Image 1 (cartoon, one colour):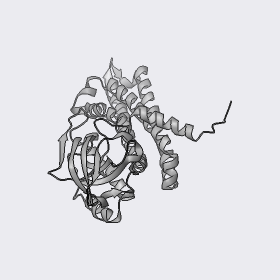
Image 2 (cartoon, one colour):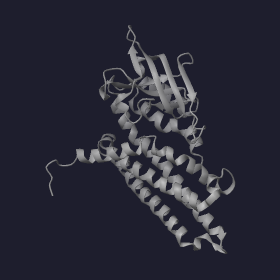
Image 3 (cartoon, helix red, strand yellow):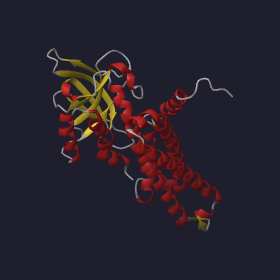
Image 4 (tube, helix red, strand yellow):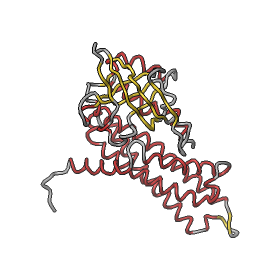
Amino acid sequence: MCPGYIDGLGAGFWIGLPPVIHFSKPAVKAKVVPEVLRGNKRICLAITEPQAGSDVANILTTATLTPDGRHYLVTGQKKWITNGMFADYFVTVVRTGGPGMKGITMMLIERDEETVETKIIKSSYSHAAGTALVIFNETKVPVENVFGEVNAGFKCVVQNFNHERWIILIAVQQYMRNMVDQSFKWLSQRKAFNKPLTDQPVLRHKLARMVAATEAVHAWMEQTTYQMNVMSFKEMNDNLGGHLALLKYETTRAATLVGDDVVQLFGGRGVTKSNMGKYVERFHRAYKIFSVYGGSEEIMADLGVRQALRTMDPHVRL
C-alpha cells in the first residue's frame, strides 16, 4: 500500500506509453516501446501546465517549426508531471496552431540535458512518484515525433484519457478494499470497555458504509471493463468517456468516505506512520490525489452529464 512508490514505478507505463503505441509513427514506436518495456528508458505523460490543468485546450507551451521544416522548437512548462524526474521521454501536448483545442499537437520529446530541466515537486502524497515541474527551453524535436496530425492532438489526449482513468480506478478501488480488510482485522482484535470493537454498533455502521461504497464502485468497474473489452476502440471513445468520468467521480467520492472512516476506526494509529496503522496513514495521506489527477471531480461530473445530454433526444418531453 505505497501509492507514490507504485506510481513512480508504473505510471509512465500506464499513461505515457499507450499514446506511443496508438498514435506514433512506426519508426518511433519501434524504437521507444521496446526501450520502455525493457526498463532501459522511462516515459511520462506531460499535459498539465501551471496555467492549464483540466482545461487542456488552453495550454501555453508552444512548438515552432524551424525554417527547414525538419524540427520543432518547444518552449514552455509542464507541472505536476508524475515520473517527470525520472523520464527519458515526455509524451507532450504543445500548441502548434491558433487558440483552443484545434491548435494543439501531441508529440514525443526526448530528454536533452541542455534544454530540458526537471524540478521535484514535494507533496504530502509522495516523493517517490517523481512528480516534477518540466521546463522546455527551445527543445529540438524531429517532426517525425508528432503523433497523428499536426493541430489534431486534442483527439489523442481525449482517447488516452479513458485508459488513464481506468487504471487510476483500478488502483483506488484496490486501496479502498485494503482499507476495508485492515478495518475488519483491527476491529476484531482491538478491545475497549472489555469487548471487541465489533460489538459497537456505531463502528459496525462505519464498516457497512465502507463495504457498501467499495462494492458499489467495484461492480460498476466490472461492467465498464467488460464494455471496454467488447467495444471497438472507436465505440469506446464515442460512448464510454462520460461513463468513465462519472465512475471516476463516484470512486474518488467513495474513497473520501473510506479515508475518513478508516482513520476514525483506527484512532491514533490511523495517523501514525509505523506499525499497525501505517497503511491507513499512507492511504489517508494519498487518497485525495486521485480526485485531482486524471481529471478533477468537478470536471468529471460535468463531463459525464454533458455527454449524456449530447446523446439525449432534444425533443423529449415529460
